[in-house]
Length: 220
Image 1: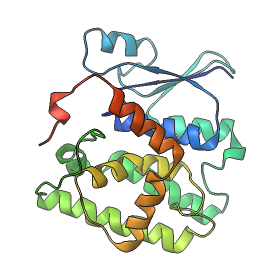
Image 2: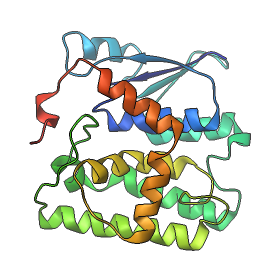
Image 3: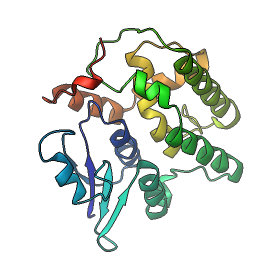
Image 4: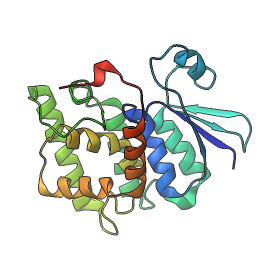
């Protein structure tokens, strides 16, 4: 199967984690190319597959030389190509809700992303949060709790089985864990389920082995 996922550093690239973990959990075969971000020549290499010069990008060679960029667009493409993977819930109400929360993640939570950049090698340690970040965390806690309560039967993830919405929030799980940010009991159990995935652990182990350092993401 001629699928190639181009991603950035596993330690830092939150957007790259999203389609990667979705494909791994769904059992979709693909090859990966890691291009370390902000290194000499990195942007030029990424521009060969992504018109924005950003990762991730998926090259689907099975149905023509198709290039898909933006994590949420890649997830939608995968859902179309592999319906058996169930990346979106089958139930219309659950599917509508899942698409809404995934889009909210794609467009929102900028204060949390800026203040707590993804860094899987960072020792778990709290840092002071701004009021804006605290508001983001409170919203995420409510969102996860609502999804689990309303739609979470049949599995430990937001809509039961692992799906696209979980993939979109996987880097948030990493951020809350790394910066020791506390959430409620339902959200905490959800985080444990995500971090318990073999795919999560494989990504984390690879991140720890990477040699590259992005100074802006190294928060003491």
